[in-house]
Length: 486
Ligand code: C2O
Ligand code: CU
Image (cartoon, rainbow, N blue to C red; front, side, top):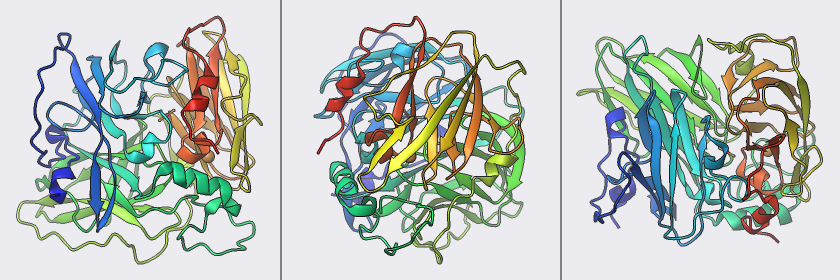
């Protein structure tokens, strides 16, 4: 198989260019204005290793969805897999019934079945979509969901950088070995030594490669840019289990948004990016031109991925998927520097919720408030309340905590109150308590979970429920079927 045929992470209009394979176009009738998205199987050969790399693609083979502020999200989602699927639109504020969580907001979509989604977009920014069914996210059932803001004051070239962790293993086998290997299978081919005592645990899973726009650094995507121009680089961490340091090298950058929400610009050249989070970097391509790698190195490993921004004729350097040094742990100190450009209006808190993060590394059971999904009692809120959620981490690992269907504001990272970033996924470091606030405006059942896929699968998930809201397909115990059990 021609390797290039699968190396398509293309978002042409956004400058992520790569030729798609020719595809047979089947005539399909779509409601007017709808975009067809298909979930299809696929494979990638990365540095000689073959693994699954499924796709959520449009008719032209490009991944994901791109629209403009004020558009409607009108999508016909076709399941081209041999298994059920459910696709979650990560970060969007949307009607609860279209949130794409099997057994909670909708029944799974059967093989060959189509589901329609239609709702107004009330945000603009960098979002993404991924399977919420079983362990499919690890098979790269992941894609960008970009809402361009044409009112943005500075026109910039839009470039998307999707980061995935890539494995040749069956994700069910990974979960199984995490459950059966003492210390959570951390030694699987990895470099971590036994008896590391109380050192924080960085990664549970060892990967074969890290990919940017579905390519290894042995053959990275080279994005054409022009000298002197401004680039909006939308970096999306679509990984199942890896946090990254994103470095722009000799190019100075400014972080201008996280999780789709504008922040007070934060200058730097090295940024932390947790699982499921996004960071938008504004980069000025220097006069005179050149080739500028943007590299994401996975926490606790020497593995890295990246793309190259290059002006016409610039010599692209040879890059290695192995960094010269193993990266340490994310510190989460970046979060303390982030300030929302448009903070939540101040008002008193009506309800305080606490979510305690717990885990048993020996048995690989992970919990929230000592409850293990799907045997949970939903957290309750009332519509109209200002709600505070305190995430208290009692484990030796950092967890990226995500709430569906809302944008929250980080208000404390353990120290004094802050007007922190507004976002949908926040890292909670070992022993840290992170507080967030939100306005409960969107009735529904909304997942709260750790976005490390194997933690989620091992129970680290619960539900925020609006009192009085009902949904006939709500049956969390139905999800017992979706994750492979021992
Ligand atoms: Cu991106 Cu429930 O997740
Ligand atoms: Cu976790």
